[in-house]
Image (cartoon, rainbow, N blue to C red; front, side, top):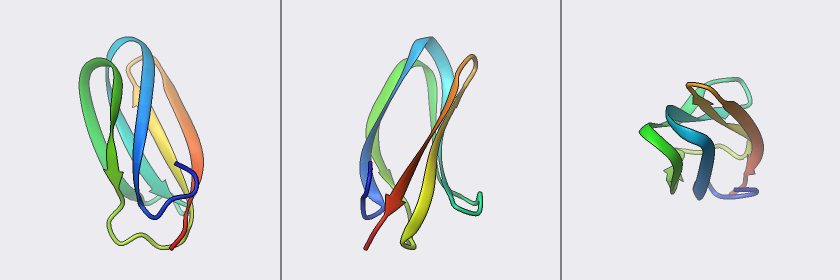
Length: 76
């Protein structure tokens, strides 16, 4: 999702079915968006960051057995 305007499509793929959460965090660690996914090995959907401020952000996927983080930039 790099760069974007705060509304973007994201795909998360995991090794096996797990419950996981997708978080969007700003550069200060404040949570700006959250998606909860139950018992799946993948998720594709639109994420919309409310009232985005241009700058650096992180998308973080935290699952039962896996986790990953990806930096991205929101521009306007």
